[in-house]
Image 1: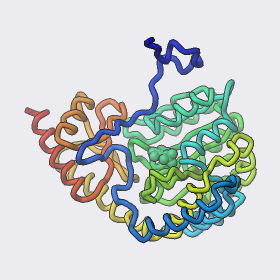
Image 2 (image 1 turned 60 degrees about the horizontal axis):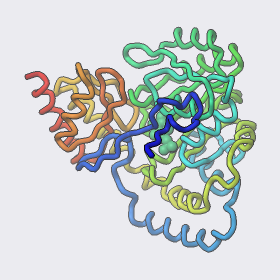
Image 3 (image 1 turned 180 degrees about the vertical axis):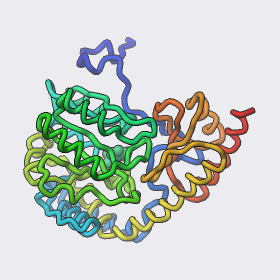
Image 4 (image 1 turned 135 degrees about the vertical axis):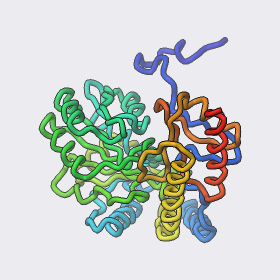
Length: 369
Ligand SMILES: *Cc1c(COP(=O)(O)O)cnc(C)c1O
């Protein structure tokens, strides 16, 4: 029997839709999902094994439901790197920031409610909205991919969304959002509803600017979302977290599954946090490689969008998908995010970036021929 999704009684809003799907292709150079290209250093691998072995001795029991030790360490990391005092009560963690965002939408969105994002941006915001039954509103951006503040304020006043997403630095464009703009959007959202404002800082460690954490002061409806998937080089760990007013942390506990964060995950993340300095040691190098990609792409004759992240959006192509395919034919996987005319490349190792630059040099010639 050939039964497909739409033959099943799935929810109406899921009919005919496709899942999140960055292709996982087996090619020599993979620069398509914004991971850190460097494997974890051996001493950290050892430390993880040690902590996981210890955790294994207690796997007959449920893990710490509130992940107190881990959240304490995350709070220390945030305080140390931002200078803004964050405590255990103001930090929450889950399996990737995607789960954090899902919990936030389960808490503050849901049926009969809406969320807005300014697109192009991280496609998962809209997908998680859909998955939680939250209506999705696609807000505008300027042609240079910065947020059009006047248009955004107007959209917020008009739609009165329950949740406002601000991705900074933005994915896939790399564009950072100035703190003044975040404050203005927060105020617009409070005047309209009041609603929750989620700043997704997945790439903040790569930014030229500072984290928005200090803006939490006096703004109980602001949430800062973070991840260990990018700068920490631990995408396989699945650890995301948020900082917000303690009341927000209390609120998401209403929807989290009991014991959502396994003892193995908590042990691994704690080991990684002991090595924060080593892990973040690659960040400066990746920022330098990002800047090199920008200048080389420009000198080859491409346009690029100013980037504060570990990736660069480049174009323009009459047919971005055709260009994506031609780059792939040369053994380099980049990302076609569906932004017309543009592709995105993650900063990899110097060798990977050289391979990418060779490929796009050839593709440029071929497309101009
Ligand atoms: C990669 C990314 C995330 C991270 O998701 P995880 O679930 O933590 O791996 C979150 N937000 C944005 C904008 C991203 O690009």
